[in-house]
Length: 226
Image (tube, rainbow, N blue to C red; front, side):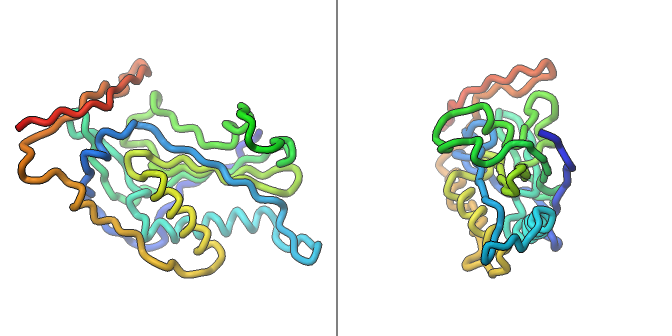
């Protein structure tokens, strides 16, 4: 595995800046990223290769920049606000895109059902211990080129900012823009319906933050005071 380049991909257009409210469910989510990897064979049409890998990577980079416009929170950063809680700052700092080259072939991964350390090499590495949380990208993408001409797209998306359904919707919309198609429906980013109601005075999350020594332990326990 050889890293070719690391890019910061920012929204293609100016986006809203500010703090986006997080719900209780967001605050008690584990401070990790959710991972998924997609495999794509060498592109062919009429038995002829029509698109180079370089062209595909450049297309993915451009479409990622465009999809971050409606999904602008993924280009932001998290921060601590005390009480084990987070803030989501929409600041358009961008997502991370890593290009990697591998001597392996897609066929080397077999049936894709077997658990293997080989898959971890296809995913972005998020350094929770070595970097402060406000410096960590909420979305990191690793594009790996294989010797067979195929490639994989590995994603790491903050579990605090997006759940599984939201992540799937993001990938689907990214794919639409990559194909040159418009989005069917813009994502709904209004989180007010998930905020704590007026009957709850305060709440805190018991969590041990990442310290300088690199240890990270946390408890997803919620305390609500009346």
